[in-house]
Amino acid sequence: MPLRLLSFRRLIRSALWGFGLTGLLSAQAVRPTMLLLDGAVLGSSIVAVGERGTALVSMDQGATWRRSSTPTRATLTGVSFPAVNLPRRGWAVGHEAEILVSVDRGLTWARQYQGSNRTDSFLDVIALDERRAIAVGAYGLFASTEDGGATWSTRKIRAEDSHLNRISAGPTGKLYIAGESGTLLRSKDNGTTWREIRSSYQGSFYGILPVGENTLLAHGLRGHVLRSDDDGATWKETSGAAPVLLACAVPVAGKGVLLAGQARHLYLSADGGLTLSTPAGAPTTGVAELLDLGNGRVLGLGEAGATLIRLP
Image (cartoon, rainbow, N blue to C red; front, side, top):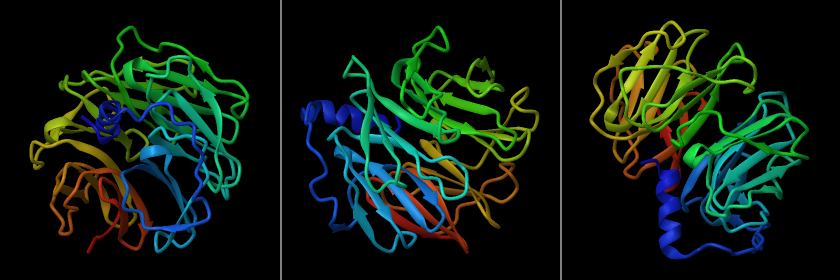
């Protein structure tokens, strides 16, 4: 179960629904020790989101942080800005079927969409550019915009209502979705149509990471890491991970691919997922997202907030 969905259930039990408060502490410097679930690197800036409507911005690669203004107290589970030079518009998504937009690189946020079913939960979002974005979530939730968020459309992209945990993009523009019950999906037309990718594992996947034009790494429950060299036509399991949840993976410049998730488990692959090693410095708490900051520095976002990981 990913941190993003665990926090969702915890918030149900804590009855934290329905607060319409804004981020009153938007001008204050803060320590990033709250639950953080996703982040985006924008040059030397970092945007991170998490519990109770938290959105943070660092202008110095994580040395200091300030709270951004948001219109919600719902947990924010995903954030994305387009992969262009100095993007301004980006989106954050979360529980209570919320989608927020920022037009100032994450300094302030406004509610752009909220579904009629407040129990719906978005789990991830990807900004294709400053007009197109796709959000995915629990029980097959799927929403997209083609006009910068002026309108959002929702639809089912598969018959099953499996949770769609993460959406990612490859170097050639193909999109991928990873979810529960062995769900792996691919789109070659910017999300208009989706096709199933079959693998031998029918448990939950929490990410599918393109590491080359046709090379994919899929990771999920119980330490499962699968590698494909033919865009998902065939898969081979990578051994070496403990049977723990692997929630996230990131390419680290000059080092390889780093995977993390459950507390005290960190894995590095220097050969594109063929083998795994265990570098020192694994966080002692759960990690929901990894961000490459360059020079062997990786920021882990999760239960302990923001934690710096240094790779040798």
